[in-house]
Image (cartoon, rainbow, N blue to C red; front, side, top):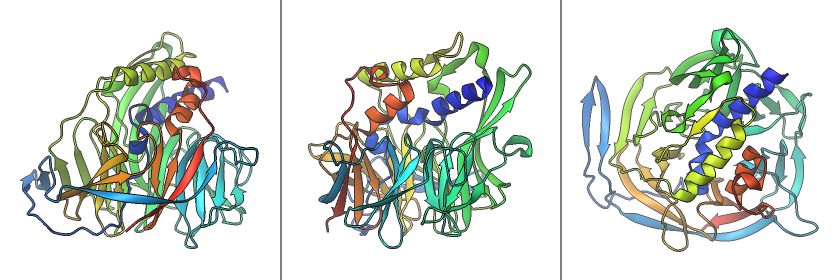
Length: 434
C-alpha cells in the first residue's frame, strides 16, 4: 500500500505538472471552435518538406488579425449561499445531444448534471472502487457505445456509466509489457472518428522497486484495452529514494495538448519548447507538422514562487527529493479541433497581459495548418485564476477560482500557494453572441 501511494502521489505530480505552469484560461479547452473563417488577406507562410514530411511554417502574426468574441450570461451555480451547490474542483464539462451539461469534479469524484436552463437534475458516480465508482477522475468523454467514460488516473482505467447512472463496465488500458491496471496512469482520454486515444504514463518498476522507468505516452487503443498505435513517447528514469526532477526538462502532452479530428487524425504538441503540432493518421503515419514563429515568455516571480511551493509539498513525503522549476512554461498549452476542422491553440502567452475585459486569446489555424487569425474571448473574470471551457457551438462555461482550487488540492491547502483560503468555486454558463 505504501508503494502504491507513492506511485499515486508521483503520478499526481507528473500528471498535473502542466497545470502548474499555465494560467487557467490556457488550462481550459480552446474557445469558439465554430466561428466562420473568412479569407480576407493572403497567407504569408510557406510549406517545406523535411524528411518527406510537409512542414507548414507560419509567421508570428495572422493575416486576419484579432477578432473579439462576446459572451452573454445564461445561468450560474455554486459559489456562496445556503442553497448553493458545493463543488470541489471542476475540471471538465461536456454536453449531450439534449444540451444537458456534465460537470466533472476531480475532488468529489462525481459528475454534476445540469439541464440547458441551469437546473441541477442529478449526479453520476461517486468515490469508491465498486461498479460505477471512481477515484479522482481527471477527464471524461462520450464513448463509441454512448456511455460516459470517466478517466481515473491511477490505477489507470475508464469507468463507464449509462446516463441513468447504471454501471456500464470498465475499460483498462494495458500498460508496458501488456499488463493491465496498476502500472499505467491515464490523464486524458477521448473518442472521435473511430479512434480511442489516451495520454498517460507507463510505469515500469526496477530492482530495487524505488527505481522506475516512466514512459509518458499518447496512444490509440482498442475496446479491449490493447494498444494499437503509439503517437508520442518520452522516457524518464526516476529513483524515488533520491528523486531529482528538473521541471524544465520534463514534458507531457497532457493535459489536453492534443486532440482528435473528425477523421480520426491526431494533433499533438510533441515538444515542450517549440510551437509545433504534429498531425498523425490513425495508424501513426506523420502527415504534416504545423509550426508558428513564437517567442516564449518567462515566468513571473509570483509564478515561480507558487510552483516551487506546490512542488515541494508534493514531494515532501519522499526522502532527499529535489525539484527545480524552469524559467519558461510550455510553449503550447492546449490544442483543440473544431467540427469544421480548424485548429485552436492556446500558448504560454494566451492568458498573459491581455487587454481589459479579455480572458484569453487563441491562435486559429485552418485545416491545412495555415495561421489565419486570433480570437480574443471577452468575458468577466481572471484569466490567470479562472477557467474557460468551450461546451458546444453556442455555449461556454467559466469556472471561477480554478487555479487556486487545483493548487490547493495538489499542495494540501491554501498554504501551498501562499494565498488565503479560496472562495467557493462557481460556474457560469455563457451564450456565445453573434
